[in-house]
Length: 192
Image 1 (tube, rainbow, N blue to C red):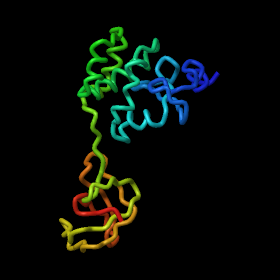
Image 2 (cartoon, rainbow, N blue to C red):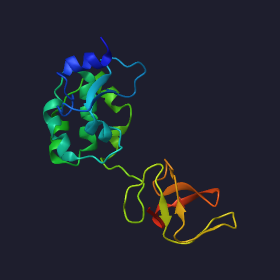
Image 3 (cartoon, helix red, strand yellow):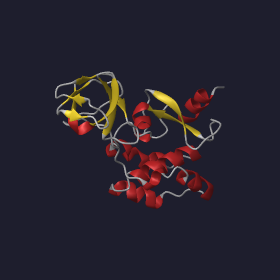
């Protein structure tokens, strides 16, 4: 039996966190080295996107954790604890954290990623209007920019295609202007 089939059987073919029945996939609970049913869970796309911080946390989506956190399976408990920790500013999440008991080994696993120390907000690359930017987008400069270390001047209205996001800085993107790759601050561009 495959891991996905094993988790589908264990969960009744539902997301083990929110009980959704569609768009389910296997999520290996980090840190893991060899995926198996003892370190993986079945989750829906909505939960997965929020767990992996590709979407903002939607607190109302996670209220079901007050029920599913009582799962007998350690990987479900670990993810529930991590998500409740990220949502700790919500009263119901703080209350749930107070009453959730984890075995010492399970609690140690839950704390290994350090995810519980962060709040629930996720920062994304956004243009000057607050529109979210993605890899490969086309943007337009809203200000003439002199490129440091070069005689190049990127003019107002210049179109920059196929941008790359600077992953460790949400205020910067990379793009080519006149054949030269430059770093551009997101506050000086808008999505095209």
